[in-house]
Length: 424
Image (cartoon, rainbow, N blue to C red; front, side, top):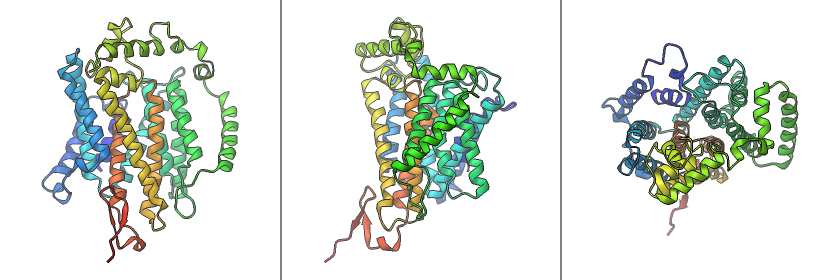
């Protein structure tokens, strides 16, 4: 439970906006209690040894994050690298903690509730502090970052509605609605694109289960019906959105009016990307963690961050860093696909069916996260890496969960795929 609270604090940033909490190091305190519970001689004695090598996702993630800290060796902005390394170290320790304490599907489900709690924090914070214009909570938050985190959380909230009581379903649906509203109120174009990706994926591959418990399959008829309903709701709701939100969202269909699409205007995202990538050719090993703004200035820019997670990764960690970053995302997506295929086995039990639903939700969350991350510098963000760590725990739990009687007499390969025992 301490780990769940830690996730809600890191992703939801409760202490950054709730009055009276900003002066209390809540994350450090909660991590201390969680670590004592997991690694201490009392509670930790009942938990198995932590084996990072057994998880492909965790190995790839920790390799990238370790490289980020190691970049101090070749960094051109060492003070920034040191300060950012402390944050990266917290992420690494959190990933290891999550892998240590998560042993069952119920444990994974609790982690997902931690994301939902973070969604409550961010969305309620936006709504309570909204006074017109672009929504933000306070000076500790950027509207784009809020939308980015909520894009990641929304699919998890939708998946958690399943098999709840009627009141529970309504509460989670209300939270999903407030999350969508908060994303729109931030006026983040990247957040809106991420939201569209999440909605499109959820329509095509619903985050719900059919009567037999299996996640619902792709259906053209259902897609057409839901798209028609969604279009009607969007058309009616549009006129009720604040004028600032309407103006910013309108640029998505008229990119010519957005300065970010102008490659000749200094400070536009397209210009920053061109300049940063040009600097990579001069130093393929990268410029070091936290150096993106300085690199932009050296390239003739306005000392702005990369505004693109992939560009940020290659600028700061070099070509090798970008390759590891992409590989981590690919492995996470691929491993979650293996969890989804568990339901293809006729002997799949309730555990495997729920794991498949959560696997689909995490895939959808990853897609929304990456879509929004194309326009933001979030290569090392807590929502991304805690999401990846949660995927690692789900894959491990799903592969080791007991099968039904129909699968007794079979063994598992090292990758968790059932194989028939050799018969004489």
